[in-house]
Image (tube, rainbow, N blue to C red):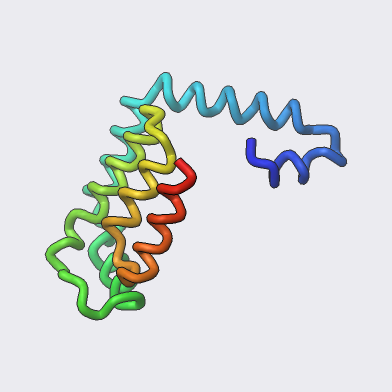
Length: 120
């Protein structure tokens, strides 16, 4: 658990209860990763989830020169990120990969990647 969650729960004396709940939830998700990933895959094909529109709006907000051919890969990248998380890949590696593929301006991206890689 993060120090913020521990600090929040300490006055309520719920830290142990919340920790056990989080551990059991994560264990269940990892044990049933195939089912979780199948459910996530449904959202790629769901016509009510307009991934391309959402990705385009977010991208234009940050970088107007972005290559829009990348947008169709947006949901698949999110599924791969979820798969890495349930396969217990180092969270810093996942975050670095997501930053490298993001539409954040390069100078900010490079600074964030340097900070993350220096801590790992």
